[in-house]
Amino acid sequence: MRKIFFITAVLCVIPLSKIHAQWGVAVGYDASATMTAEGRSANFKSGFHVGVTYDLKKFSDIWYLQSGLLFTSGGWTEDNRNFLGFDISDYKVDMYFLDVPVNFSCRIPIKQNRLILDAGPYFRYGLFGQKTYKWDGADEEYASFDDDYNRFDIGSNIGIGLEIKKKHLINVAWQISITDIHPGNNEQHVRFRIGWGYLF
Image 1 (cartoon, rainbow, N blue to C red):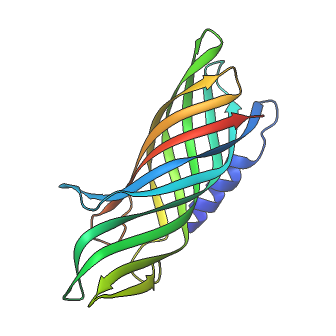
Image 2 (spheres, rainbow, N blue to C red; image 1 turned 180 degrees about the vertical axis):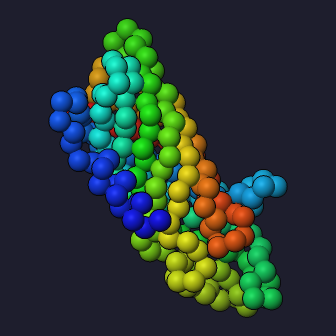
């Protein structure tokens, strides 16, 4: 899985000859939580994303392949949780990732602007983070990725947005992972994203 992540990252940012390419920057707000088959299993936590994007007009005037490299924050919060047999409160997980989205993007002209429809996978690698919770009135902190949580996250992304005069992008997206947060626990990351981008 590690090799797949890095090979995909390299392929998505290397310019391809004879294909129109355009660099950009992206920044925005993220809200992340966790989900099981029964529904959402934790509260949403606010975060952010910032990085560079890379668009390839490969198929036609409306079909693009969009990728990039983003630094993102995520995690979740829980009001009450049982940890090692003890009841704890105010459980919070902070995580920071490198994020490589790979979207197939349809861009439909609307006068001087374009409607954007995105769908595709993402590949995410956890850099660092921490777990914080209250226990007997004191705050306890541990590293997020030591033993509990997978660093690698692969999932799907769908989004809709608007490209304004071929320079500014405004979009919203929903992401859900297909890898387990804890090995074998059938709990996945989910993320809602609002973003702004600028194309050079």
